[in-house]
Length: 394
Image (cartoon, rainbow, N blue to C red; front, side, top):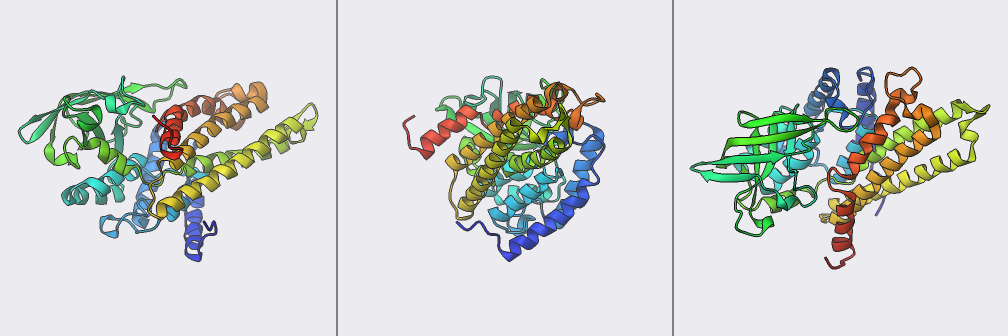
């Protein structure tokens, strides 16, 4: 693998940096970055939507897609560069549930009619998606889901509950899995649906432990959906889901965010004194910061390796699981360590005049725990690495 970027990739990276540097200046007061920040206020949501519209006009929302659907036919490496630069500058504008989760499934498995209906609208940032997968009794074991879809003429009637649905209160469309055949093995009786959110769907807030509204419960009550909204084949939803996950899954975004955080924290340690000496002169603090710098570079290089494998047409379940596992656990340890270094100042919430970084790390300590669960728990990632990477028995 050659880690050097081509001249074309360097030029594209420079264009991304120029754009996101300017957009970062427009961030609302109190903006902290991260994909969940867009849900925290009306100002944050408006900022996200404004950037999304600009990215859509540039054709940057769906870089690897075919041009006929609104993409640019770039490689996974170019997509990774975009994700890294955007995350480093803490700029929103990307509906990851739309462009990075449901869209790849539509690209791989949907009819041409569905592709023409949905993909250009995603590329133009016209719609906002949420994901209806997890249920109260079906998280890591997603195939145990019980939401039912019963045929009724040209429609299906949906009844059931979804949970931990990020951003459902802001979304106008949902993609979800429902059981269409309860008589077959659990992986084989699931169907993948896409739909606008309308009558028959109820959304209730589910506050996280830091009291912010990011997650929701979603209830389907005799929700009627046309068979035309099935992605792939009926009862093949599990395979549609798996086919769509071979996208840019390197976790470069979270790595870039923490890299920026570390750079700012290093400057804080240079300027802040404890017992008359800068924190940066404390050996333990220096060693911890050095360890994170090393780990972040490892995570970054691994992310590029995953994207390179994907650009060669390889499936990367074990490699992407390793990236997810390593980066999410790194984020948790980073947040806890920053609070530890700051002492009691690190435990203060945003709004306190004594809070450092506007209370960022007090919030991050709690929010980061969710990263070890969302998108696949650490334990599930280890299992995938063992089964598919190390070829160990189940």
